[in-house]
Figure 1 (cartoon, rainbow, N blue to C red):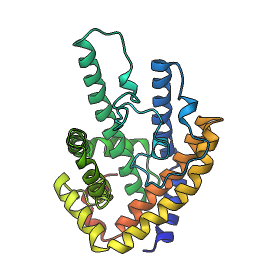
Figure 2 (figure 1 turned 135 degrees about the horizontal axis):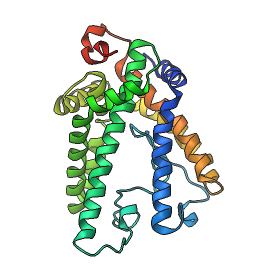
Figure 3 (figure 1 turned 135 degrees about the vertical axis):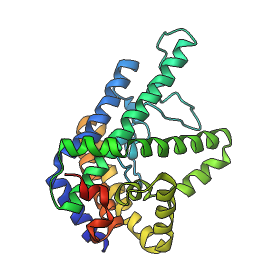
Figure 4 (figure 1 turned 90 degrees about the horizontal axis):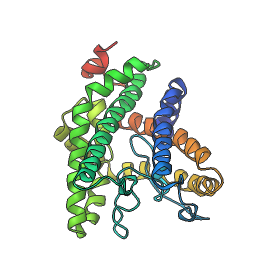
Length: 279
């Protein structure tokens, strides 16, 4: 399946399941509101550049942070400023050690909710592609629950590696190099219904076995997003809410396209027992 076919199919999936774009939009709005409650503003206008271009691949659940690094995040680390851009860096006034317990509890709750959303989000896209049908809220809850533990484990592996990269700065470069061939891990976990380590192995093999083709596919996504980011970030200086809505609609179609590209033409449905059996 070529690039444009995958993206066209992904666009069709989101047209049938347009409600899925609410997941990244609501998540981003929540982060803006959390920042407002913590710091008294949705985002520092001075942190939004007048001109900015960002080459990126959307995260599985897209976020405006994909194209604007200064966008609020519950957990974020910058090698120059440390944790100060994070919503959880706000001084809650809770005395230590309770403040540390509050922060740790917030991080755990964030991971639990985010991984559930990720499983439901990607599961509904896969379900819609496999069955050529609309996914429902019932589907979302089912897939969120079904893939939950595996996405929690995958997130923990990522955080552990990131912590090592922060403690040992040269590992940050390794972190990003390793992340490139693992683009398809979440997609392999859902589409092929694999355990975590098997999904990592399958994703790595899938990417490296067609290295040139997959790098070309990444550029096919990253270049249009980069061009669009110039407009959306300029628009964010006027109204960040409109910008994040537009970006998340676009990025959600790309996520669907990535899953379609990974899956290829639909194989024998019997090989996808969970997606096939569940109604």
